[in-house]
Amino acid sequence: MQITRCLHTAILVSDLEQAKHFYGTVLGLPRVERVLKFPGAWYEVDGYQIHLMLAESGLEGLQNAEKWGRNRHIAFSVPDLEAAKEHLLAHHCPIQMSASGRAALFTQDPDGNVIELSEV
Image (spheres, rainbow, N blue to C red):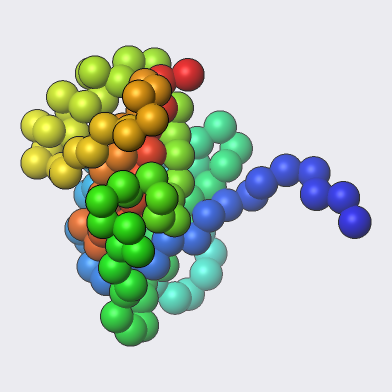
């Protein structure tokens, strides 16, 4: 077997409209068409897709509330971490700087899914 590239990450959400606002408006991800019938929304960054899917039951919480980066998360690259931080704060998003000291921060979507932003 040979894996040739990553295609997408599926993220479970409890409120699709809130999630679409966060991923589409706050993070600014471009939305792409989807043909599936179940509730959801797809976004794409550089050929990689994020699939939001409406959860059918309760969502799990953080496994490590002290260090968000030690939970399941998706990571995105940003050119200016300080600008990204200010943008997230302006949208009242929670922020936790990376405990490692590197140029990275963690935030959470409305369902508590962790998002990493790294300046690379």
